Each structure stands twice: as structure tokens, then as C-alpha cells.
Image 1 (cartoon, rainbow, N blue to C red):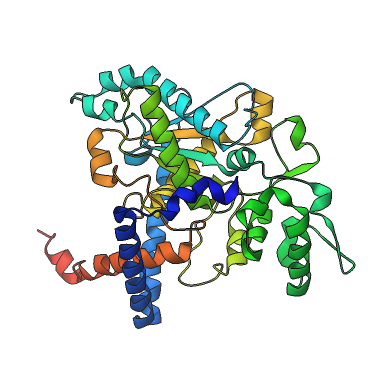
Image 2 (cartoon, helix red, strand yellow):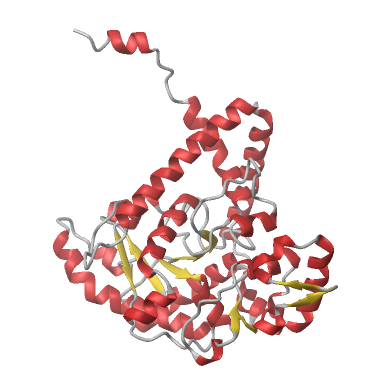
Length: 395
């Protein structure tokens, strides 16, 4: 299916055009600000950003469920509920995944609505009518299964000019070897050809390819390649799943829009190195997990929120071997808020289904977009003098 799956994005709405214009303007503003600042100020803003990253990591730590709890974290990770099945889902295609997500969303909403109503003192009728969950986190290998991104190991591990290329070690080879390897793979590996990947996209797909896979026959002796064009996939999944939920419930559950984000368990360093991000002062790497894609504008759902939710989702899902041993398979995780007001303040529920931008998540774009806000926050913070602070507090 590949690129045809999100062909609807070619007909951009006025709202999407307005977002693209705002994104371009803000990123350029961030770039101009970064170039204007001296190294000391650049480092200060990075320190402020790193403090925010650390905060998200700590919130993820206490936001993951502890046993059979329903509410456990704060704000956007107050409600994190996995969809659990006792057998891996043999996904036939992406439409099958959409059906599975919509059915699971409805079942989870209906089974937990009463408990949420009981826990809240305020009226939650509107919240429940729009859906208990604002977002869904999906592991990359689930998306890869849905698109059939499966290739025999022998088609990916072979000699180029006498050098045996291991796709997981792609950065260890010369540019010449990598280029020839890509050209051969472009002909051999048909499962990803519909996406028309360039060399960097293909190598990033290899970098996060999975050796550990669901115990389903077709994956034996094969590799699951990582998905590409994940922002487009997430936006399309969001649109289609939202429509399915409305249709299946006759609008009893009528979400304004639903966030979809896609992540991978691999550490992000090789993945970002391939794109040129690693070590770049304007491209911070969020450690411990690889963020691949998300629906929703940057204003609708922040980059660091995707990071926190991905960490929580991974802690819940664990690994495919854990799932096999314990017969608990968790293909996706639903996210909801503590109280309705959290969603209205922290999230733009109207724009969670929009296309963020094309391709996969870019730390370059995301950080550049955030920079003006970091600078404003720093500039608007009062400057203190310890002597005055001390004198104001002594008797």
C-alpha cells in the first residue's frame, strides 16, 4: 500500500495549510535566534531544555501503571491503559490494524467509564461523549507488521565488494559500500518499495529492524523493517480510527480528534546519526527510546509529551519475549487525562489528527520550534541577588 495509504494528504485543508505556514515561520524564527545567540546563551537554553527532558523522564517513571491501578501519573499520563491480548494479532494489513484499534478503544472506554465517573466530582458527560482517551501509542513493529515490512535475512545480509554487510551495523561501512548496498536492496527488498525511500530513510529502517518478533510463522528467518513516513502514517491512522469509532458507536463516542504516536525501543543514537542529527547542537537526542512519528500539530501535542508517553508505553509493553512467556501481548496503549480540564489546558483536542509535517519526527524541527519559547521564558524570569534574597528572609 505504501504511499497510497496517505494520498488523502495531497488535498490539504485550509487548517493544515495554516499550520504549515505557522510551522515554517516559527522554525525559521528559532533558527535565526539560535544563530544570533552566543555560545554561552545557546548552552543556557539547552540546559533549560535538558531540565524539561529530565522532568518528563521522572514523570514517566511514576506515570506507568503499578499493578492493576487505573490512575497513577499526572496530567497527560494519568490514565495509561494497555490493550492486552493472550495471543499476538496476525495483522493482515493496515485496515485490519485500524479495526483492531477502534474496537479496543471502544471496549476499553466502555469498561472503564463508570470508574472514571465515580472518581470525579465534576460532571464528565462531555468528556465521556468525546472519548475517555485522547491518544494511542503504537510500537513500531506493530506498524511494520500491518504494512508487511518483512524481508528474508538473506536479502539483507550479503557481500558488497567482498565486504559482508550487516544492516544493524550500517554506519560501520564506507559511503561507497553503503551506496552500493542500498542500490542492491532497492531491487531486492520489495516490501518497502511502495514507500520509495531514499538511502537515509532506508538505512534508518534497517537501524531499527527487529530480530525479536512475534512468534508467528511468517516472521521466521525474516527481519521486520522499521516503518518510514511515520508522521503521515500516524495522521492517516488518526483520521481513519476516529471515523471508525464514530461509526461503530453511532457517535455515542465522538472524538474531536485522536493522537497517534509511533515509537521504537531501540536507543536513538545510530538512527539520529544516519540523519545527521547526532552531536548537532540544535538537534538534541531524547535518550532511551526512538520517537518515530506522531499525528497532531506541535502546538496540539508537545514533542516532550510524546517522549513521556512513549517511555510509559514502553515500560508497559516490555518486550516481545516477555509477552511470549507471560502470554500478555500489548500492541498499543491508550492515554487519558486525570480530569477534563487537563486536556483543555495541555492539549488541543481539535488538532490531534493533523499532519505534523512529512517524514519522521525531526529533533531539528522540534527544537527549533521550541527555541523562541525557551528564550522568552529565560528573558521573563526575574534576575535574583542572593544578598537581597537573604535579607528579605531574615528576621
